[in-house]
Image 1 (spheres, rainbow, N blue to C red):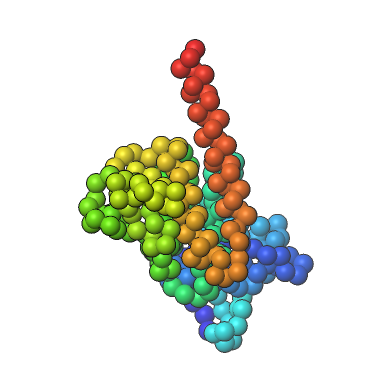
Image 2 (tube, rainbow, N blue to C red):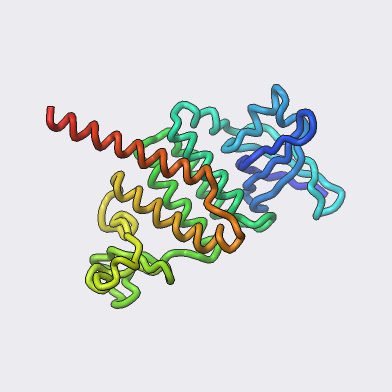
Length: 253
């Protein structure tokens, strides 16, 4: 059996002298693994880096075998992300979250397309944080845990949406949620279409998607939040704090 597909490398676990078991997010076949001979060799290492886009061929005697993979680099997003630590951290988080959240060999083309959009934007610091948040929201939706953020769960109205129910994943308006605000999650205005995203809202959005990824995806699988995502969120929070201090200092000067 064999197939050919476009894929994003999610991870490459060393196996043998120069080989690796590589996890991919393919366009048509979802998350799929295979053994790549020479993946950790001199030439293979540059191809099979997490985040890279590859043209891959998979072959096996039977459909349920691990199989062997070979491929060619289409675009080296990993090398592009290495120009800035925050971009590399984002790329690592996306690859690890996809690896840990997606069931193997289950087609999720929307997740793949969302990943492509994220990777294509990774060099633009004005947009990739927002796109990453929307990618996680799309991942939750694909896995059956989509959030309903367009109207209030209590009133049906779509104005002054301020909270999200941690139980239902539905938005709640400011007035309806005020008595229960300590039990509700914050809805960043940009996710409700009420404002443009800023650093504070993006931090809130990462907390929001992180809550539902943990509650709905990772915890039921007896897994904690992937360390790469935790490190990414921590790094992003520190960077926005530093940026805020610098802006305050400049305004005072």
